[in-house]
Structure formats: structure tokens, C-alpha cells
Amino acid sequence: MDALSFLRADHQSVLGMFEVLDGAPKGTGATESGLATMVTNLVIAESQHEAIEEQFFWPAVRKALDNGDELADRAIGQEQEGKKLLQRLEDSKPGEVDYHDALAEFIKAGREHIAFEQDQVWPLFAAAVGKAELEQLGEKLETAKKVAPTRPHPDTPPNPMVQKTMGTGAAVIDHVRDAVSGRAGENPPDPQAH
Image 1 (cartoon, rainbow, N blue to C red):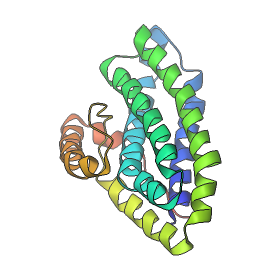
Image 2 (image 1 turned 120 degrees about the vertical axis):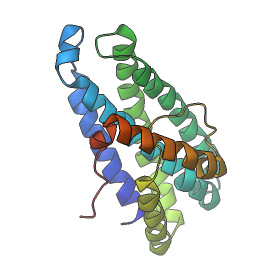
Image 3 (image 1 turned 180 degrees about the vertical axis):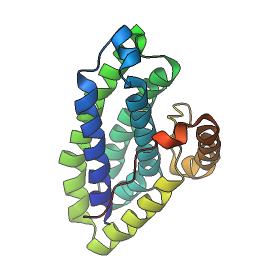
Image 4 (image 1 turned 135 degrees about the horizontal axis):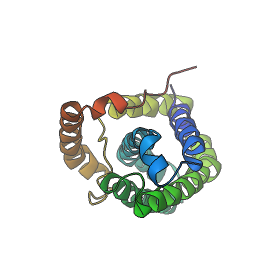
């Protein structure tokens, strides 16, 4: 699957989660609604997505476009802010004010970030690279997602080399923690080629 199709499928999955989470119950209803499981799915999906973009997609954007550094820096800045919100979700529980505030902020910021990528970055990138390069990048993204971190790690620098070294170590720890805690069963499926 080419890179943009792979990322689009990821985005569609996350946007679907946003639709469900938009009207999430608060207070005692939140703890009984299964909200925590859905938010865990969101945290896992977004953590993996941002990690693989930082490893492979944003470096490719920097290389392919004259304004690639500016676009990648803006997107990575948005992603870093998103990781902080995801960490707030990890650190709190449904029913707590900060949990619901962080969720609402993340949904709003996430929609804006997806729109920025799809409307501003992708058309430029698609015009600058060939189909073979998109396919090759898609394969890298697909492979990397299988072993990507499942938690936000907002303090890990969003540098591709750091992601490939420290990020890999963090991912191993995340996957072990997920297996031990049972959280691994909440990992959303990877996008499939259509």
C-alpha cells in the first residue's frame, strides 16, 4: 500500500474514534460506558501513527519539498502537543475533569492536524515524489507500525534517529507492559489495502 493510502486509512480510523468519543459521557456515566477502552484504543493508534510518521514520513517530506522543513516542523509541533494531551489521558481516569478536558482538546487538535496533513502536505508531497517512492515509503510505514510504541512518550525527542533507537526501546517496553497488563488486546488493527 502506498504511504498516503496507508496514512489515510489510519486517519479514517482515528476520525471514526473521534466521532464516537465526541459525545462521550462524563461523571459516573463515563466509568461505566467503556470510555476507557475506547480512549486506550485511541492512545495506542495515535502513539503508533505519530512514531512512524516521525521515523519515516516527515524525513521524506523534508527531503522532497523545498518547504519540507517548515511543513514537517509545524506538523511535528502539533504532534508533540498531541502527545502531551495523550499523556494526560494516560495519567487520569474517565470521570475526572482533566481526562475529559484532555480528550476534548485532543479531538479538536487531532482533527486540525489531520486536515493540515491531508489538505496542505499530502498534495505537495504526492506531486513531488513518484509512485514507486510512495509504495516504498508505505512498506516502511506498515512494517514500522507493527513494532511502534503504543504509548505517547511526550518527552522523547521527535527526531527520526532518536525514534529509531530510543523509540524502539520504548516500543519494546510498551509491548511487554501491554502484554502483561492485558492492554495488548485493545490495540486497533492496522489499515488494510482495499
